[in-house]
Length: 302
Image (cartoon, rainbow, N blue to C red; front, side, top):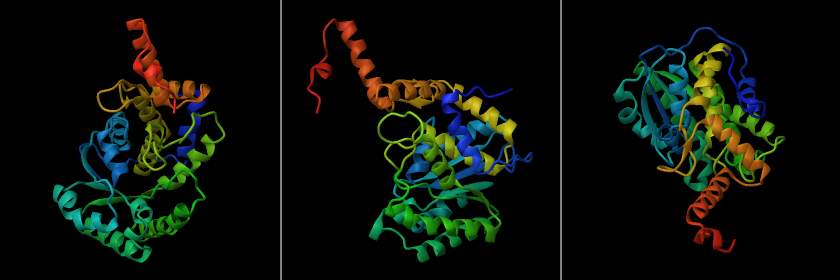
């Protein structure tokens, strides 16, 4: 069965697959396994949002007959020193079979309150050693870009942190999902396509929107060993899951990822963000019900 992805959005899938395109038949995570997701706010949101990358990894595996137990271990603002301090409590004590480790954005982004590269190396090595000593398989996730301006000073500073993660994965024989490379590929491709004003794969330059979360989940599933046919099953499950994308936050309207793609395209044509497009449509609907303009419609534009 082939996945029905709109031509307009085929680049999101292709960009995520382009960096690692070799199909592998053996999936490293088994049915019934427990997987911990250690990280910062990107991971925390990835577990609480229905369209977050943690939930997409879970549903993508389920679409291929692999049900996992998810252990959410993301805390907003966390750096490598804080993750090392809580690794026993939040991961090792829960006895997962696997842990994915997403760490590095805040170590750099927080500037003077961040973690220097030499200490980051020590922290990450100790964290991995603790997990391996407990018999937990580790997957390293490279740190995603800090703001979508790829040549900014923060991303230049982040580069050696990610270089170290590649070295650590090689030295310790760890699985690695190169999220940074995949997000960069997606951003470069998106810049050449019609898109709404503002950010492309993130909500604010750092935290993922539904499209960015899908790129991350694709990278992780490929690192787990899903082949092309298995990825097609995962993509179909993601696109058609009802009400998986919350448009205006908790309790607001929600749509499938396929519907979100259509809204994204409509927003691009009107030079609006998806949120603005939906808000404007809600206001018009209220006007139609009341037969008069709402206060929001009458309010002057800033």
